[in-house]
Length: 484
Image (cartoon, rainbow, N blue to C red; front, side):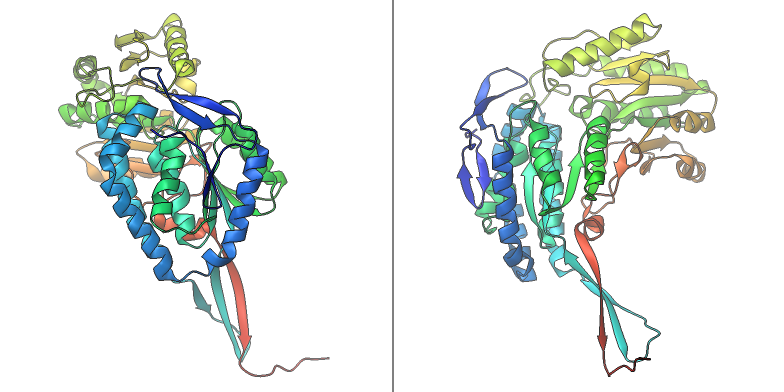
């Protein structure tokens, strides 16, 4: 993996301070390479270059923007093997999740390419004779994109593809845990695809210094939009600062996602779906199932089969195709998982599978009887841990699920689809999957949540709403008479 440097104005650059930090593999702990440790100076340079590039890029022909994105999709597809290795090395991402990310982003780029030809406005009816009125969509300008590490390729890709396709320019701040696959890699691919200098700028930073870059994006009047994917506490702080500056933000935050297994569910299918939905990428996806509600008549059989399934999930090296549960992202994450499980057990919870750390991994873990006052029950735990609660009915499960302050995604497993759809309509979440698990996404879908999971929607279909401004434009076809 190459050294990670800033990409500003179409050129590779070191941090203005000359500082770097070590990018380490979560599996081996080895140093992958140095990363530029940027600060406010670097961020301001990137913002200025994005601002200067906006005038030309916003006026580029639809064909030019489309061509760049289609080329980028082809380049990424050609680099597939190398990208999968980089994802495993930098983020502990196994081959299954890596393949999901690459496939998703290739489709994302190809779908984003058609946004260049999206209708840019509509004619409006006017009651004033001789007036022709229009609502015209225009790119907003510079977009600040703040992306996380956990699905670094996908989440950085969706943060930049829509804005670029619509004629905006972007300053991308990847996570310090994924500066290459979430940042520099995108600069490489889009630069090779012919994206003009300054249209995409990437600024990296050392651990603990994300706020410096984020504040620069928030404070600059040249940055017109910010999109952020990450935790609810961080998103809340960002939204508070953005509100004081009257700056619009798109937030996709934490998820405490419920999966409801009704009494008429196919138990074998429910077990397979739950294992996939809870433990894909070590549970380090915002969509992963965190809470499973199973109706009492089938609870004993479900729990026995689910615990047995989970106990067999292979744990280890993410480069091994057989591995299901790889390393968690860092030592702090591992310590958090261990602490929360220990706290829950001391409060009366029981472990049915897993629960014993195997650094740098934490095994797939299932708990029952988790007291509602514990951290595990109340907040998103980003790792391979799921809780199961026995309920008297699927309707009770909906009520319990809705008590959470978070509302990203839910799933309902039932043979009675009409009933499942009625349950789905009552769930206070942005996404519901009937007869599937919770981890699903497609580039064209409106992805996002409600309540403390944020606001706005990612997805190609929602991009114009999030990253353009509507201008009311009227034209008089004849002179108008005025009363004075």
